[in-house]
Image 1 (spheres, rainbow, N blue to C red):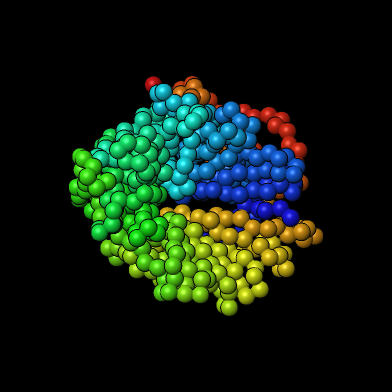
Image 2 (image 1 turned 120 degrees about the vertical axis):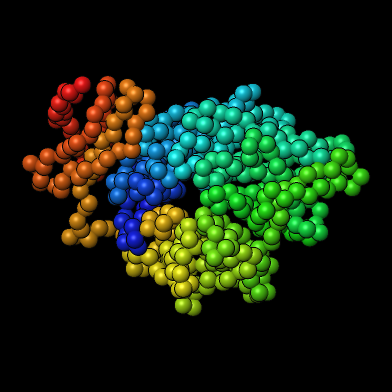
Length: 488
């Protein structure tokens, strides 16, 4: 049975199209401004080919091929919908501009051979100008990498942070950024060697062109493994992980301008200057593991909010919401066995994720401001054990994306959404295109349907692009432009 991409607009379900009949599809992100969802669709039978895709409402459109590998996938879209990022079959980074109208590979920083994305959260600024990732040299016996930021597609390498007595860093990755693209977060690797014999990964951030290692938990030695993963929209608080008592713990760093000087390893000089204060996210009572997967963009009542999952005293996994460091078990469906939170709105009022009921059926769910769980509508047959999962949510909480099984066969009286046609235009002779504007082509049998875009403003040398996707064969029989000369 196929996996369908799903979207919920103000909790109302839309089952989005596939690239091919019986092909799977999975969304990865959405634009609050344009309501476009991006992800990947399988375009060859048997799941042997995948292509980056975007959905306008229910209608799917394959993004232009770009990069070296035959397969492509989209992993994120800017808040304003202008830039989409993803990767090709070789794992190399791709950038689509003009709302997906044109795409091409991102060039790595000087001296490197490829570029890639490592983060799973915000890796592109709200306006699409900045993208963060990693420039790499994949070679034997070891790989080299350096955190990278792209400004309108132009790569700049971010300097390795100074690690004091540790061996100088030889690898660093960027996992995310703030909404403006001014603060970049990730980690840096100090390799094993002399004088420090153990490889060490340190969580860090970059601001103002400088790399800053993030502080260990007070009373702990700097971690042998750490990383910063996502942050608030303004970059004032960063979430990630470090080691506490030899165990990996999720933390958030605040007071990012605060510095501490630590001589590490013991006897090593010079001392390392660390930044920020690490706050450990609590376990659930009796539990012994927890993972934070996303955070609210804004402070809520003066405290940061993160969501994910944690285990209870019986070892069961439950969706968890942290306000500051305090953990709240969001629970699950009645008599259910487990749950997980995957995303949260900017104000922390809506949490989305998945939960299993007493029969072991997996459902897409959300928790409201009162922490009450609700099932989201699904498209699967009633007996299906995978009803779906909510994977992410827009900052304003009105757009949720996820996936789920589809019915084994459509109902006899099923009504298909009319196909859409999208117009975008460029005022710089085709170098960059604006966000596509959609119109319905009309339902089957509407032969006299006229699709028009009016009052498109004044321009010189404008270039138009039309694109559409439909589950039936379509032919463009003609188009015309009505213009009036400017008065001056």
